[in-house]
Image 1 (cartoon, rainbow, N blue to C red):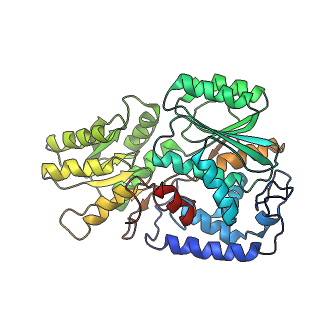
Image 2 (image 1 turned 135 degrees about the vertical axis):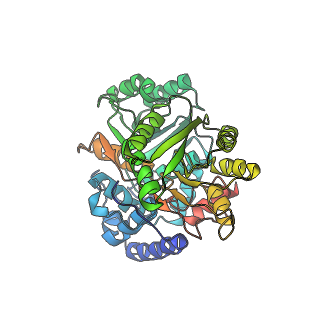
Length: 429
């Protein structure tokens, strides 16, 4: 993961607005934007997929770098250090869509099936559990990315509601409906591979994002966009010991007991800790808000003054903070994966008070869904992509301005690459 990376917390909306103005100016002369054109109604071009590239070509490297800065929450990830497919995905995210395209994207987001143009490719979005705002934002990221591909004519969305048989049935359904590009958040690991394999045998290309499926064969899963889970554990340890200078006992919060993701980063974190620093307690939360409150209460009740809490899920951090507040104990430093506006709120409320605590987090990671779509579209064009594209997930130090008072607590944070006007419309419903 490299050295610790930081960002400015309060200026991201302004940077996005400036980027949009610049990109719009570049696109004013591009003709292939109308909904009645051969491109199927979208103003985007295609890179490796063989369509009109004018809109994509109009995006400069500097503009694509600005989107990378937003996605990673730091200016320290160079665009040219990334996989070429990820570079293209970020470049496409900089294409300024028309008002008509944004309306169509919102229509698609509200429904399970929509027509977006005359393109021959049907895109399937297969979510294992689409019920929270993070998943809904990731869905919109995919839809907005799809609007840059004239080849895509139809989008179908499925939600398994955390049920494996339903998820497998949904994959089969997408295949039977002719989806040849399938993007998925796979909550079920290797159990989903037989259905993926059958869909790919029928002609689809499938990419998953964020969560890894270790050792998945290419005939079952053609691409994964994910992070290095072990490296993230090691980086968490570096934040605690190198940046915060902590020694003594630290604590880990995990999700469901024995989950492989937790087991992997826990081990790498523990192995990275120097002498004099150790994990004093590890508590499972079952990924629930109530479970996080109970886990925080257990840490308080232990009587140990833990220097930091490590977690791989930002949403329940307010419950952990609440448990410490109710127990009358000082809140430890918190180092967590992902981003959440409720977490930002409870952190920022305590700035300048005796209850202030250090907070480090990654970006929301929703943008990785865009890279999954670009990967399968590249493959459908006959070009090779890496079967596993490992993207950086740097930890950044929270700074004042991180909390957005006009967004709900479950908002994933300012690293989402959804335009502000579209996001406001999503949140108003």
